[in-house]
Image (cartoon, rainbow, N blue to C red; front, top):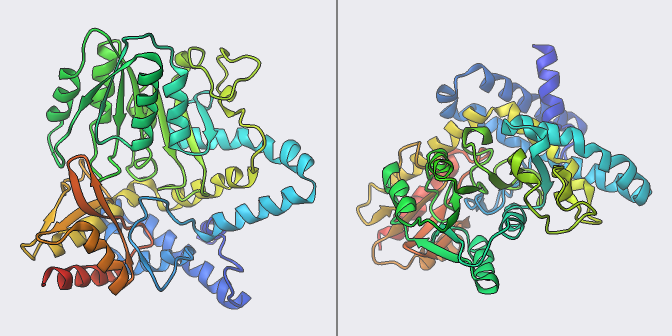
Length: 429
Protein backbone atom coordinates (compact mmCIF):
# COMPACT_ATOMS: atom_id res chain seq x y z
CA UNK A 1 0.00 0.00 0.00
CA UNK A 2 2.85 2.37 0.86
CA UNK A 3 4.54 1.87 -2.51
CA UNK A 4 1.22 2.31 -4.38
CA UNK A 5 0.52 5.51 -2.46
CA UNK A 6 3.97 6.77 -3.41
CA UNK A 7 3.24 6.02 -7.07
CA UNK A 8 -0.02 7.97 -7.02
CA UNK A 9 1.62 10.89 -5.23
CA UNK A 10 4.22 11.10 -7.97
CA UNK A 11 1.53 10.77 -10.63
CA UNK A 12 -0.62 13.50 -9.12
CA UNK A 13 2.39 15.64 -8.18
CA UNK A 14 0.62 17.97 -5.78
CA UNK A 15 3.48 18.50 -3.33
CA UNK A 16 4.19 22.21 -3.22
CA UNK A 17 1.01 22.98 -5.14
CA UNK A 18 -0.51 26.45 -5.38
CA UNK A 19 0.34 28.83 -2.54
CA UNK A 20 -0.08 26.35 0.31
CA UNK A 21 2.51 25.78 3.00
CA UNK A 22 4.62 22.64 2.49
CA UNK A 23 2.70 20.89 5.27
CA UNK A 24 -0.71 21.61 3.76
CA UNK A 25 0.33 20.87 0.21
CA UNK A 26 1.86 17.55 1.27
CA UNK A 27 -1.33 16.73 3.17
CA UNK A 28 -3.37 17.53 0.06
CA UNK A 29 -1.17 15.31 -2.07
CA UNK A 30 -1.59 12.51 0.46
CA UNK A 31 -5.37 12.93 0.44
CA UNK A 32 -5.62 12.92 -3.37
CA UNK A 33 -3.35 9.89 -3.53
CA UNK A 34 -5.46 8.04 -0.98
CA UNK A 35 -8.64 8.96 -2.83
CA UNK A 36 -7.23 7.56 -6.09
CA UNK A 37 -6.19 4.39 -4.29
CA UNK A 38 -9.69 3.97 -2.88
CA UNK A 39 -11.27 4.61 -6.30
CA UNK A 40 -9.09 1.88 -7.77
CA UNK A 41 -10.49 -0.60 -5.26
CA UNK A 42 -14.00 0.00 -6.58
CA UNK A 43 -15.58 -1.22 -9.79
CA UNK A 44 -16.25 1.56 -12.33
CA UNK A 45 -19.99 1.46 -11.58
CA UNK A 46 -19.50 1.49 -7.80
CA UNK A 47 -16.94 4.29 -8.04
CA UNK A 48 -19.20 6.50 -10.17
CA UNK A 49 -21.33 7.78 -7.29
CA UNK A 50 -18.77 7.87 -4.45
CA UNK A 51 -18.98 11.63 -3.93
CA UNK A 52 -16.44 11.79 -1.11
CA UNK A 53 -13.69 10.15 -3.15
CA UNK A 54 -14.31 12.25 -6.26
CA UNK A 55 -14.42 15.46 -4.21
CA UNK A 56 -11.05 14.60 -2.69
CA UNK A 57 -9.59 13.66 -6.08
CA UNK A 58 -10.80 16.99 -7.51
CA UNK A 59 -8.21 18.76 -5.37
CA UNK A 60 -5.68 17.75 -8.04
CA UNK A 61 -7.12 20.58 -10.19
CA UNK A 62 -6.72 24.35 -9.72
CA UNK A 63 -10.10 25.40 -11.15
CA UNK A 64 -11.71 28.67 -10.13
CA UNK A 65 -13.88 28.55 -7.00
CA UNK A 66 -15.84 31.54 -8.31
CA UNK A 67 -16.97 30.26 -11.72
CA UNK A 68 -18.64 26.88 -12.12
CA UNK A 69 -17.11 25.65 -15.37
CA UNK A 70 -19.54 23.41 -17.24
CA UNK A 71 -17.93 23.90 -20.64
CA UNK A 72 -15.12 21.38 -20.31
CA UNK A 73 -15.99 20.13 -23.78
CA UNK A 74 -14.23 23.09 -25.36
CA UNK A 75 -10.91 22.76 -23.55
CA UNK A 76 -10.36 20.91 -20.29
CA UNK A 77 -8.24 22.24 -17.43
CA UNK A 78 -5.06 20.38 -16.60
CA UNK A 79 -4.38 18.83 -13.20
CA UNK A 80 -1.58 20.57 -11.29
CA UNK A 81 0.92 17.84 -12.14
CA UNK A 82 0.54 18.63 -15.86
CA UNK A 83 0.81 22.39 -15.32
CA UNK A 84 3.97 21.88 -13.28
CA UNK A 85 5.49 19.66 -15.96
CA UNK A 86 4.90 22.30 -18.65
CA UNK A 87 6.58 24.92 -16.47
CA UNK A 88 9.49 22.63 -15.73
CA UNK A 89 10.14 21.74 -19.37
CA UNK A 90 9.68 25.34 -20.48
CA UNK A 91 12.17 26.71 -17.96
CA UNK A 92 14.63 23.97 -18.89
CA UNK A 93 14.32 24.97 -22.56
CA UNK A 94 15.20 28.56 -21.72
CA UNK A 95 18.48 27.57 -20.09
CA UNK A 96 19.97 26.72 -23.51
CA UNK A 97 17.19 26.50 -26.12
CA UNK A 98 18.89 24.79 -29.03
CA UNK A 99 20.56 22.26 -26.75
CA UNK A 100 17.72 21.37 -24.37
CA UNK A 101 14.98 21.63 -27.00
CA UNK A 102 16.58 19.68 -29.84
CA UNK A 103 19.04 17.40 -28.08
CA UNK A 104 17.10 16.59 -24.90
CA UNK A 105 13.34 17.21 -25.11
CA UNK A 106 13.01 16.30 -28.78
CA UNK A 107 14.45 12.88 -27.90
CA UNK A 108 11.61 12.43 -25.45
CA UNK A 109 9.08 12.11 -28.26
CA UNK A 110 9.79 8.43 -28.82
CA UNK A 111 8.92 7.17 -25.32
CA UNK A 112 5.93 9.53 -25.39
CA UNK A 113 4.85 8.07 -28.73
CA UNK A 114 5.01 4.56 -27.24
CA UNK A 115 2.99 5.72 -24.23
CA UNK A 116 0.28 7.21 -26.44
CA UNK A 117 0.24 4.12 -28.63
CA UNK A 118 -0.25 1.94 -25.59
CA UNK A 119 -3.17 4.10 -24.44
CA UNK A 120 -4.65 4.01 -27.95
CA UNK A 121 -4.11 0.29 -28.49
CA UNK A 122 -2.15 0.63 -31.74
CA UNK A 123 1.46 0.48 -32.92
CA UNK A 124 3.77 3.40 -32.12
CA UNK A 125 4.70 3.33 -35.82
CA UNK A 126 1.16 4.60 -36.57
CA UNK A 127 1.05 7.52 -34.11
CA UNK A 128 2.18 11.11 -34.73
CA UNK A 129 2.07 13.90 -32.15
CA UNK A 130 0.72 17.27 -33.27
CA UNK A 131 -1.29 20.21 -31.95
CA UNK A 132 -4.99 19.40 -32.29
CA UNK A 133 -7.71 17.56 -34.20
CA UNK A 134 -7.98 20.27 -36.86
CA UNK A 135 -4.32 19.81 -37.74
CA UNK A 136 -4.61 16.02 -37.78
CA UNK A 137 -7.72 15.90 -39.95
CA UNK A 138 -6.44 18.72 -42.13
CA UNK A 139 -3.44 16.54 -42.88
CA UNK A 140 -5.77 13.78 -44.01
CA UNK A 141 -7.99 16.14 -46.00
CA UNK A 142 -5.07 17.51 -48.03
CA UNK A 143 -2.80 14.49 -47.83
CA UNK A 144 -5.06 11.88 -49.47
CA UNK A 145 -4.81 11.75 -53.26
CA UNK A 146 -8.16 12.44 -54.94
CA UNK A 147 -9.36 13.12 -58.44
CA UNK A 148 -11.96 15.54 -59.76
CA UNK A 149 -15.37 13.94 -59.24
CA UNK A 150 -14.32 11.79 -56.25
CA UNK A 151 -16.88 11.99 -53.45
CA UNK A 152 -16.78 12.41 -49.68
CA UNK A 153 -19.69 11.54 -47.40
CA UNK A 154 -19.99 13.64 -44.24
CA UNK A 155 -22.71 15.17 -42.08
CA UNK A 156 -23.82 18.76 -41.66
CA UNK A 157 -23.28 18.20 -37.94
CA UNK A 158 -19.53 17.58 -38.33
CA UNK A 159 -17.12 20.12 -36.84
CA UNK A 160 -16.88 23.39 -38.86
CA UNK A 161 -13.11 23.23 -39.40
CA UNK A 162 -13.50 19.84 -41.03
CA UNK A 163 -16.41 21.03 -43.15
CA UNK A 164 -14.47 24.12 -44.28
CA UNK A 165 -11.43 22.02 -45.20
CA UNK A 166 -13.44 19.69 -47.44
CA UNK A 167 -15.38 22.61 -48.94
CA UNK A 168 -12.10 24.28 -49.87
CA UNK A 169 -10.91 21.12 -51.57
CA UNK A 170 -14.28 20.92 -53.31
CA UNK A 171 -13.83 24.46 -54.65
CA UNK A 172 -10.19 24.04 -55.66
CA UNK A 173 -10.15 20.51 -57.06
CA UNK A 174 -13.70 19.61 -57.98
CA UNK A 175 -14.23 16.80 -55.49
CA UNK A 176 -17.83 16.47 -54.32
CA UNK A 177 -19.33 16.36 -50.84
CA UNK A 178 -22.44 14.23 -50.36
CA UNK A 179 -24.17 15.65 -47.31
CA UNK A 180 -26.06 13.83 -44.55
CA UNK A 181 -28.32 15.89 -42.29
CA UNK A 182 -28.83 14.02 -39.04
CA UNK A 183 -31.80 14.54 -36.75
CA UNK A 184 -30.33 14.53 -33.24
CA UNK A 185 -30.66 12.83 -30.85
CA UNK A 186 -31.08 9.19 -31.87
CA UNK A 187 -30.46 5.83 -30.23
CA UNK A 188 -30.53 3.52 -33.22
CA UNK A 189 -27.33 2.62 -35.10
CA UNK A 190 -29.22 1.63 -38.22
CA UNK A 191 -30.38 5.21 -38.77
CA UNK A 192 -26.79 6.41 -39.17
CA UNK A 193 -25.58 3.41 -41.14
CA UNK A 194 -28.44 3.82 -43.61
CA UNK A 195 -27.72 7.55 -43.92
CA UNK A 196 -24.10 6.92 -44.92
CA UNK A 197 -24.96 4.07 -47.25
CA UNK A 198 -27.73 6.06 -48.97
CA UNK A 199 -25.31 8.97 -49.55
CA UNK A 200 -22.71 6.66 -51.12
CA UNK A 201 -22.22 6.15 -54.86
CA UNK A 202 -19.69 4.34 -57.02
CA UNK A 203 -17.55 7.51 -56.90
CA UNK A 204 -17.42 7.72 -53.10
CA UNK A 205 -13.85 7.54 -51.83
CA UNK A 206 -14.06 8.73 -48.20
CA UNK A 207 -16.44 8.53 -45.24
CA UNK A 208 -15.77 11.31 -42.73
CA UNK A 209 -17.05 10.07 -39.37
CA UNK A 210 -17.40 12.11 -36.18
CA UNK A 211 -17.34 9.70 -33.26
CA UNK A 212 -18.85 12.08 -30.70
CA UNK A 213 -20.69 15.17 -31.93
CA UNK A 214 -19.35 18.42 -30.48
CA UNK A 215 -22.79 20.07 -30.56
CA UNK A 216 -24.78 17.66 -28.38
CA UNK A 217 -22.53 14.79 -27.32
CA UNK A 218 -24.26 12.29 -29.60
CA UNK A 219 -22.10 9.17 -30.06
CA UNK A 220 -22.08 7.64 -33.54
CA UNK A 221 -21.40 3.92 -34.13
CA UNK A 222 -17.89 4.56 -35.46
CA UNK A 223 -16.77 0.93 -35.43
CA UNK A 224 -19.80 -0.17 -37.47
CA UNK A 225 -19.37 2.71 -39.90
CA UNK A 226 -15.68 1.94 -40.41
CA UNK A 227 -16.49 -1.73 -41.00
CA UNK A 228 -19.16 -0.78 -43.54
CA UNK A 229 -16.74 1.59 -45.30
CA UNK A 230 -14.00 -1.06 -45.45
CA UNK A 231 -16.45 -3.56 -46.93
CA UNK A 232 -17.07 -1.08 -49.76
CA UNK A 233 -13.39 -0.21 -50.30
CA UNK A 234 -14.00 3.29 -48.87
CA UNK A 235 -11.45 5.18 -46.74
CA UNK A 236 -12.61 5.91 -43.17
CA UNK A 237 -11.56 9.06 -41.30
CA UNK A 238 -12.59 9.32 -37.64
CA UNK A 239 -12.86 12.70 -35.91
CA UNK A 240 -12.39 11.75 -32.24
CA UNK A 241 -11.77 15.22 -30.80
CA UNK A 242 -14.34 14.69 -28.06
CA UNK A 243 -14.23 10.96 -27.46
CA UNK A 244 -10.58 10.03 -26.81
CA UNK A 245 -9.84 9.60 -23.06
CA UNK A 246 -13.55 10.33 -22.50
CA UNK A 247 -15.24 7.17 -23.77
CA UNK A 248 -13.28 4.03 -22.89
CA UNK A 249 -12.10 2.44 -26.15
CA UNK A 250 -9.01 1.74 -28.25
CA UNK A 251 -8.42 3.09 -31.76
CA UNK A 252 -7.91 -0.51 -32.82
CA UNK A 253 -11.58 -1.16 -31.96
CA UNK A 254 -12.54 0.93 -34.99
CA UNK A 255 -10.16 -0.55 -37.57
CA UNK A 256 -10.24 2.86 -39.25
CA UNK A 257 -7.78 4.23 -41.78
CA UNK A 258 -7.30 7.65 -40.18
CA UNK A 259 -8.02 9.04 -36.70
CA UNK A 260 -7.40 12.45 -35.12
CA UNK A 261 -7.95 13.83 -31.65
CA UNK A 262 -7.14 16.76 -29.35
CA UNK A 263 -5.35 15.74 -26.16
CA UNK A 264 -6.17 19.07 -24.45
CA UNK A 265 -9.79 18.01 -24.12
CA UNK A 266 -10.57 14.87 -22.14
CA UNK A 267 -7.03 13.67 -21.52
CA UNK A 268 -6.39 17.03 -19.79
CA UNK A 269 -3.05 17.42 -21.55
CA UNK A 270 -1.53 20.88 -22.18
CA UNK A 271 -3.34 23.30 -24.48
CA UNK A 272 -2.40 22.82 -28.10
CA UNK A 273 -1.55 19.12 -28.01
CA UNK A 274 -3.03 16.49 -30.29
CA UNK A 275 -2.47 13.13 -31.90
CA UNK A 276 -3.07 11.48 -35.25
CA UNK A 277 -3.23 7.83 -36.21
CA UNK A 278 -2.73 6.51 -39.73
CA UNK A 279 -3.02 2.82 -40.52
CA UNK A 280 0.43 1.54 -41.43
CA UNK A 281 -0.39 0.70 -45.04
CA UNK A 282 -1.72 4.22 -45.69
CA UNK A 283 1.20 6.27 -44.33
CA UNK A 284 3.22 6.07 -47.54
CA UNK A 285 0.15 7.12 -49.59
CA UNK A 286 -0.53 10.20 -47.46
CA UNK A 287 1.26 13.51 -48.12
CA UNK A 288 2.36 15.64 -45.11
CA UNK A 289 1.19 19.26 -44.91
CA UNK A 290 4.74 20.35 -44.05
CA UNK A 291 6.92 18.44 -46.52
CA UNK A 292 10.11 16.59 -45.62
CA UNK A 293 12.83 15.35 -47.96
CA UNK A 294 10.88 12.07 -48.23
CA UNK A 295 7.18 13.04 -48.38
CA UNK A 296 6.19 9.58 -49.63
CA UNK A 297 8.02 7.78 -46.85
CA UNK A 298 6.23 5.14 -44.79
CA UNK A 299 7.65 6.71 -41.58
CA UNK A 300 4.94 8.32 -39.42
CA UNK A 301 7.47 10.90 -38.23
CA UNK A 302 7.18 12.74 -41.55
CA UNK A 303 3.97 14.30 -40.17
CA UNK A 304 5.85 15.95 -37.27
CA UNK A 305 8.01 18.30 -39.36
CA UNK A 306 6.41 21.43 -37.90
CA UNK A 307 9.59 23.45 -37.49
CA UNK A 308 10.38 25.21 -34.23
CA UNK A 309 7.70 24.91 -31.55
CA UNK A 310 7.64 24.58 -27.78
CA UNK A 311 8.45 21.07 -26.62
CA UNK A 312 7.18 21.79 -23.10
CA UNK A 313 3.46 21.14 -23.76
CA UNK A 314 4.26 18.09 -25.85
CA UNK A 315 6.46 16.46 -23.21
CA UNK A 316 3.91 17.12 -20.45
CA UNK A 317 1.43 14.88 -22.28
CA UNK A 318 3.14 12.04 -20.43
CA UNK A 319 2.01 13.37 -17.05
CA UNK A 320 -1.55 13.71 -18.38
CA UNK A 321 -1.52 10.05 -19.45
CA UNK A 322 -0.28 9.01 -16.01
CA UNK A 323 -3.08 10.95 -14.34
CA UNK A 324 -5.70 9.49 -16.68
CA UNK A 325 -4.43 5.97 -16.03
CA UNK A 326 -4.43 6.58 -12.28
CA UNK A 327 -8.19 7.12 -12.49
CA UNK A 328 -8.80 4.43 -15.11
CA UNK A 329 -10.52 4.88 -18.46
CA UNK A 330 -13.64 2.88 -17.67
CA UNK A 331 -13.96 4.42 -14.21
CA UNK A 332 -13.68 7.88 -15.74
CA UNK A 333 -16.32 7.12 -18.37
CA UNK A 334 -18.79 5.81 -15.79
CA UNK A 335 -18.34 8.88 -13.61
CA UNK A 336 -18.81 11.29 -16.51
CA UNK A 337 -21.96 9.53 -17.67
CA UNK A 338 -23.25 9.48 -14.10
CA UNK A 339 -22.78 13.26 -13.81
CA UNK A 340 -24.57 13.91 -17.10
CA UNK A 341 -27.50 11.69 -16.09
CA UNK A 342 -27.62 13.31 -12.65
CA UNK A 343 -28.40 16.81 -13.92
CA UNK A 344 -30.47 15.64 -16.89
CA UNK A 345 -32.85 13.63 -14.72
CA UNK A 346 -33.18 16.52 -12.28
CA UNK A 347 -33.91 19.41 -14.67
CA UNK A 348 -36.50 17.47 -16.67
CA UNK A 349 -38.76 17.43 -13.62
CA UNK A 350 -39.82 20.80 -15.01
CA UNK A 351 -41.89 20.05 -18.15
CA UNK A 352 -40.55 23.18 -19.84
CA UNK A 353 -37.03 21.72 -19.92
CA UNK A 354 -36.29 19.54 -22.92
CA UNK A 355 -33.24 17.32 -23.39
CA UNK A 356 -31.48 17.03 -26.75
CA UNK A 357 -29.41 13.94 -25.95
CA UNK A 358 -30.03 10.27 -25.29
CA UNK A 359 -29.42 9.07 -21.74
CA UNK A 360 -28.34 5.63 -22.94
CA UNK A 361 -24.59 5.22 -22.24
CA UNK A 362 -23.83 3.87 -25.71
CA UNK A 363 -25.14 7.11 -27.26
CA UNK A 364 -23.77 9.79 -24.94
CA UNK A 365 -21.37 10.31 -22.05
CA UNK A 366 -20.37 13.61 -20.40
CA UNK A 367 -21.83 16.09 -22.89
CA UNK A 368 -25.50 16.93 -22.56
CA UNK A 369 -27.81 19.54 -24.05
CA UNK A 370 -31.10 21.09 -23.03
CA UNK A 371 -33.46 23.94 -23.83
CA UNK A 372 -36.27 25.70 -22.01
CA UNK A 373 -39.55 26.25 -23.83
CA UNK A 374 -40.12 29.91 -24.60
CA UNK A 375 -36.57 31.10 -23.85
CA UNK A 376 -33.86 31.53 -26.46
CA UNK A 377 -30.90 29.26 -25.69
CA UNK A 378 -28.49 32.21 -25.89
CA UNK A 379 -30.51 33.95 -23.18
CA UNK A 380 -30.40 30.83 -21.00
CA UNK A 381 -26.60 30.63 -21.25
CA UNK A 382 -26.31 34.37 -20.61
CA UNK A 383 -28.49 34.13 -17.50
CA UNK A 384 -26.55 31.14 -16.18
CA UNK A 385 -23.31 33.07 -16.39
CA UNK A 386 -24.52 36.58 -15.54
CA UNK A 387 -26.79 35.71 -12.64
CA UNK A 388 -25.33 32.45 -11.34
CA UNK A 389 -21.68 32.47 -12.55
CA UNK A 390 -22.14 29.12 -14.32
CA UNK A 391 -20.25 28.79 -17.60
CA UNK A 392 -22.02 26.83 -20.36
CA UNK A 393 -22.31 27.40 -24.11
CA UNK A 394 -25.34 27.92 -26.32
CA UNK A 395 -25.37 25.93 -29.55
CA UNK A 396 -27.10 27.02 -32.76
CA UNK A 397 -26.07 24.77 -35.61
CA UNK A 398 -27.70 22.43 -38.14
CA UNK A 399 -30.77 20.89 -36.41
CA UNK A 400 -29.36 21.84 -33.00
CA UNK A 401 -30.66 24.64 -30.79
CA UNK A 402 -29.68 24.00 -27.20
CA UNK A 403 -27.43 24.80 -24.24
CA UNK A 404 -24.48 22.41 -23.92
CA UNK A 405 -23.41 21.33 -20.44
CA UNK A 406 -20.13 19.51 -19.92
CA UNK A 407 -18.91 18.48 -16.46
CA UNK A 408 -15.55 16.79 -15.86
CA UNK A 409 -14.09 14.48 -13.22
CA UNK A 410 -13.42 17.40 -10.87
CA UNK A 411 -17.13 18.38 -11.01
CA UNK A 412 -19.11 17.27 -7.97
CA UNK A 413 -22.82 16.61 -7.62
CA UNK A 414 -22.87 19.57 -5.23
CA UNK A 415 -21.71 21.71 -8.15
CA UNK A 416 -24.45 20.24 -10.30
CA UNK A 417 -27.05 20.93 -7.61
CA UNK A 418 -26.13 24.59 -7.97
CA UNK A 419 -26.60 24.33 -11.73
CA UNK A 420 -29.91 22.44 -11.38
CA UNK A 421 -31.24 25.07 -9.00
CA UNK A 422 -30.31 27.84 -11.47
CA UNK A 423 -32.02 26.09 -14.39
CA UNK A 424 -35.16 25.54 -12.33
CA UNK A 425 -35.28 29.22 -11.37
CA UNK A 426 -34.81 30.33 -14.98
CA UNK A 427 -37.50 27.87 -16.16
CA UNK A 428 -39.93 29.11 -13.50
CA UNK A 429 -40.45 32.43 -15.30
